Image 1 (cartoon, helix red, strand yellow):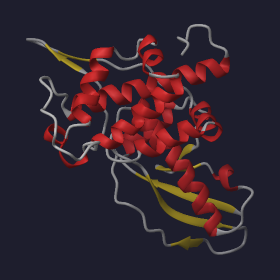
Image 2 (cartoon, rainbow, N blue to C red; image 1 turned 180 degrees about the vertical axis):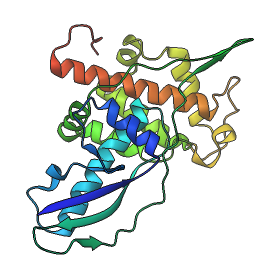
Image 3 (cartoon, one colour; image 1 turned 60 degrees about the vertical axis):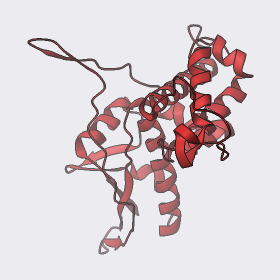
Image 4 (cartoon, rainbow, N blue to C red; image 1 turned 30 degrees about the horizontal axis):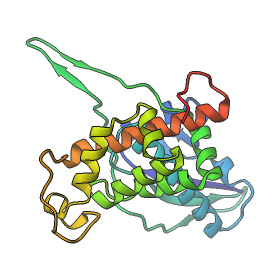
Length: 248
């Protein structure tokens, strides 16, 4: 029995996600369509178990893509089917979120005659990312927050709070060099204040004046996801015994 689980999403972006995993990922390309590796479902024989495994794996892929491929969109589980020798192919109806991954434009510098695109460093391998999510609850929590809205100041605050606690407190987080004290203070001053953060602010009472230099959502998203990337890379590096990763 072979389970076939297709992936919904922009083909270019799925290709980029597959390439970033350096051959160790769970995405395979078959006849022009991206799907999850059937080996993931080798030990199960019912649709519900396949769907559960597929959704979990897609969660890993979405968390990885948001952190290391700079996309704010998601991939989703598509059609699921089952093949057995000498039997008709069975198709299961699957209802999923309608989601599209946008092509990634990381950075651009425009001069008088040319534009220059700058490719970022690749993230860690998908296998290491998946293992970390499975082994550490705080990483699993951050992955769940990353699946939420990054326009939500309270959600962004949860991410930085989880990382800050895991690092050993504010001072130790700042000591890593991933963020400076001024930027962290600006973020919290903006995220906490409904006068600038609106209904997603971390506090409800409008009892404090707006900060003199509030942070906009784009800057906050870039700041928080950047810290999360460095935190994940450091944790994976520490697990692997890498000597060039800054300690907490």
